[in-house]
Length: 221
Image (cartoon, rainbow, N blue to C red; front, side, top):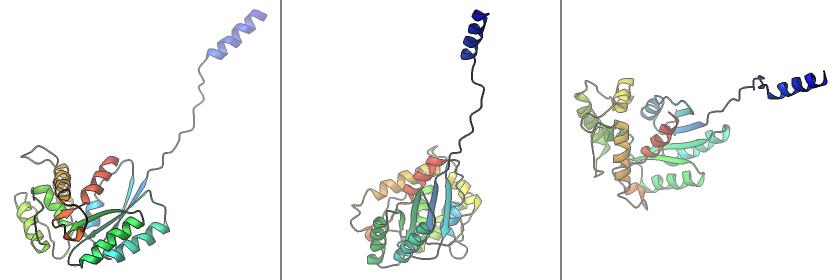
């Protein structure tokens, strides 16, 4: 009897524990993207499908320093894992543009600026622009020339929306290189950005640091 009891005890010790552990919920990081434009930038970033992060693009209609200050208000109101400011040089004076970058750095915000405007980032998906001077007044015509072969158009004068069809094209593969267009845009933007010393970003036309933000977002797809 005693030997039998010992055998049962030994058997129980060897039996696997079938008790299920309660599932642990992993909270996704939240990325706040505060944009100068109310239409173009938010309509672009809202179409990113992130699986391991939550993206919150907001179009505020503020510019340079006022946008950074508004971002500070939004970032203070809620907890975010990353905070990005997205703004353009446009025709704002050099001092304000550079001051906005300095202030954003002070607040430890990440910055995705374009000199001259966000549409330059769109152009880089479809054209290997080398970063030389290109006025934003020419962006709309340039984009539509590039889109024409795909049967698409961009209304940069009124709605300024990156449509689903345009976004899907930007996400697609370039026939000539075989690379994803967004990867080409990142390569081109980074190359053009690295041509400058960044001591005076307001003078660094044409350039954009949107590639930094998109590179970050791609980590969560």
